[in-house]
Image 1 (cartoon, rainbow, N blue to C red):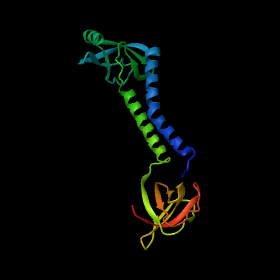
Image 2: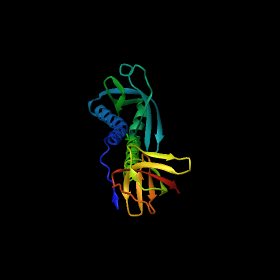
Image 3: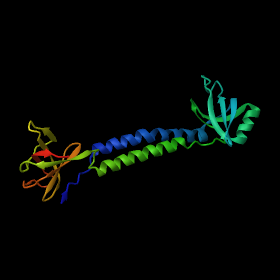
Image 4: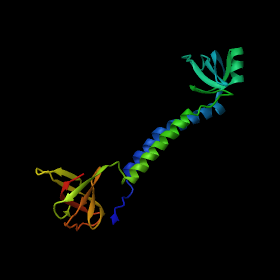
Length: 219
């Protein structure tokens, strides 16, 4: 029994790459900004607004100096317990900030959050799963296969997919021959396959060709 093998569908490749970029680029940019803040940031002294316990660590809320952050936005950072204790006592916190970008900062003793990485990896895994499912289903998400019985011999088909119900309840089906055997043939339509049982009818169309047939659907 033959089976059609599809080539690479570059349109779908572009869509997948675009989706991966949408998910991963913001995370990569955020990590790069954090790295720049830690290595190239200007050291300033922030005013501590409050300190609260977070398990074995501490969450410090603070405001950067006005010449660094004119809006005086209250920001938070999770730090090791000893850093939180010092901040609570002195009401000050040493922060490295990228010039002109007060939202990009780093504190010595800062506790890294793994949530963004986990979310990104989960999203990547979901896309990979969708790609695998799409590939296994012939390059697209397909509806369940229909079953039909041929009412005539198969003949050469046209471009495109047709599943057209006739007045007598039968269907005119047009698609690409995806599988071919002595007793049945599978026609691949745009979003689903139709397996046609030939009974006594002939199929002169080879795998990869386009065929049309009138058939009675039974499932």
